[in-house]
Length: 228
Image 1 (cartoon, rainbow, N blue to C red):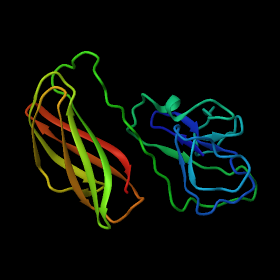
Image 2 (cartoon, rainbow, N blue to C red):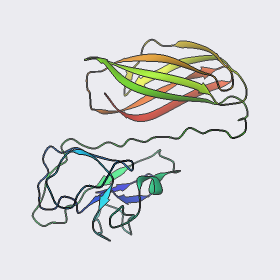
Image 3 (spheres, one colour):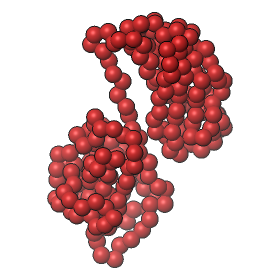
Image 4 (tube, rainbow, N blue to C red):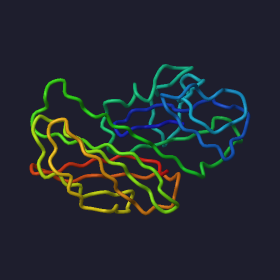
């Protein structure tokens, strides 16, 4: 499996794992923070693993882009962080899958999704003006309701007046209650609130968008999420 980022970065996330054993109803989560790689031989088991590559220099046929690819351990040393950190995540991400063993085939019936974590900038000296950052965490309240616990923080050097949370979308679903008046945020200050979404699809990939305004302009935050 070859993951290609919007800037043309090419990273082999899987190659040569679990040879000889069929995969059926398997869900792999790949993360630099996982404890270990997927084994080369053995029986496939769902779980969280590091990106894993056992072969050097495999070339993916078209429509995958040509040229050398970056590879993770044990064949290489690349990681998600070394390939993609610091790059603009906006644009088209592509996943190419090729079975190098003759006669094999299959489908990825459950699809795939990509979770991108953006870094929050911290100023070593006071940041000029207002800088509002939004963090959030999803939890499920019941079978039909998902809650977003939202924190809005001012990491700037001046007060953000009349902060309003006006936008909350989980996929195409608008949250409630909105708008919300969050008051004034002094430098370093933060406020917590809750936005509720009607949703009955746990495990699905989606996008979470949160935003609003203050006396000096708008703010917005977006990220990919897995619905709890």
